Image (cartoon, rainbow over all chains, first blue to last red; front, side, top):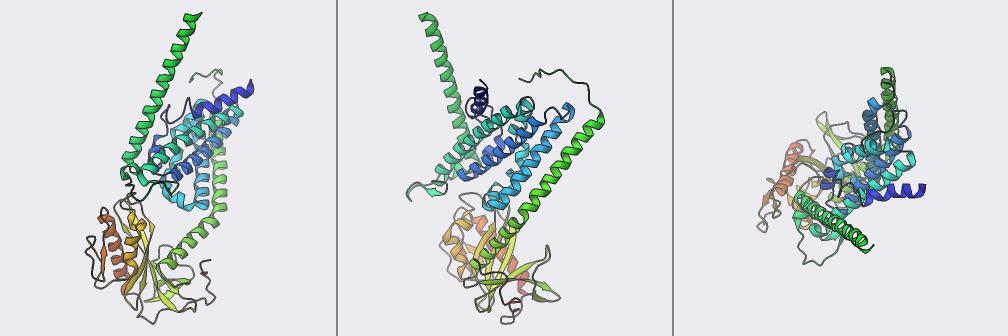
Length: 214
Length: 226
């Protein structure tokens, strides 16, 4: 049973409660750095590191931190992990760091991270909190990557810098500019909501058929 | 989901609140110092390597370099330029003979500061290479100032006298003219302006051709780019 519980926490962030497509959180990095697949993945990985690290610490110390100063403590913990991620990226992949620029320090302000600390990590045992963080960050990474991949393919005719089309392909430059981010996100959200609506409808039909059958 | 099942505990003392934050801040500070100290050597080495590669790229045939600054009325070689001191890089060939200067310049572009490095041969009064070090120009348009090989090649044999001029694409015929990129006129002109301004700022300070400072460290401590 316990195994199922943590598995449930892991997968809910990836699909059912996806932070971007369902909760619509973390829009700022989502729109800003998804102009190529590599940037999207680097941003997603940095967020994953910060979210998992913070959730682990917040959950471990959840009975030590007084309620009155919990938000300040969460922010201190998050900011520390963000700084670590910032310097590590600068040392290991300076080119990616340059592209992401100010958006790495801004992970501190990503409401997805503080939201998970307040809503989940500060209330549940460490194991579940880490699973939840992994799931949410995984969902965020997935969302960033799908947006980044679509925008890079259409806007640059490439994926991970590898050309996909012949020379005749005229890139839609607008897709790697800010409007392309809004456009792609809008289309993906449309699809997601349509899918959820259809699924709910289907489940309702099934339930009704079962009632009628019995 | 917001509701908390736990019973509200008695309000903790102010001291406890202050201590919690103080300890959290202290641990965080130590962690940040730790990661800074750990990554600093790699970050410095990366920056130095990038600069060296850029210098060798804008000055063909150069395998050694040294930093040059203007002090006491003349150009001299220094191992470590002071912070915020204007600096150019002297490029030297395998025998240690002076080839040309690599001059860093910066100025406003279309969106943010463009920082670049260009190679200058004082004997020929020619720019022989240009490399954009930093820019946040529009992807797909302005970023052609470094992605468009044809534009970058415009700077491979460019006369700086009387000054470099950006002209409409396809109309450049003089030795001091650069074909601007269609759709990125402002970015192209910014690059040209930065080079002109940097050149004007240094030209009076550079020594007469042939009297450049020799390579200070004959073993070439700046490395060979390997």
